[in-house]
Image (cartoon, rainbow, N blue to C red; front, side, top):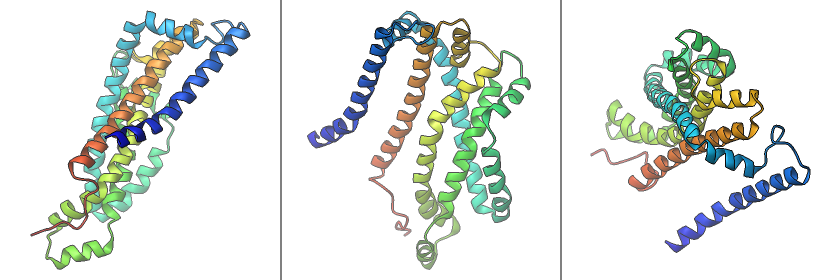
Length: 265
């Protein structure tokens, strides 16, 4: 236990010290040069604004977080389901995978206005669909790769035991795809927050983090704007840490990385 805590401390302290040093330098630059708040607020001013607007930041974070969470869950489920279809039907894989890669390369700012205009101004559906699409393609590409890239010797060994295609899928392909799934999840967890956040820049309801940041920036309330930025950063970090926790919990539950050649008897 002590060695585990020591390793955790070694991993945590360097970024903590760097962050503290960065904030200290930032504070000194603002104070020594007497920079106005509307140009660059000091970290202390941002903290004061965050405390003063904590309830508003929390309410805005709940809106953005709910959009990100709904889109994330739907995107992961659809991406996993579609990856199984691509693995099962080779022709569908050959037709869909290049298209998925191409669509995934389209910038968010092009698609968001289109989806927002498809629904009412107060609807969150467009933002959730945008998050779902971003998550879907990342999960699809990664999980499909994990299902396909199984060593030929493992497949041949399973077939030598007269394993059915269903047994090969569950006991060889799925365990091989799990690390790919969690790699994708660690990518899309914070990305879902970023997408929901950016989508709020292009209209829709005015109660999320993105809109609050732009509205305060437009009125030169930069300390309040940065308070909402801190809320957005905390939200993205929370999603990322949850994805890591899920990966560690799954790995611990199954006793580490699963073997791709389990007992089929």
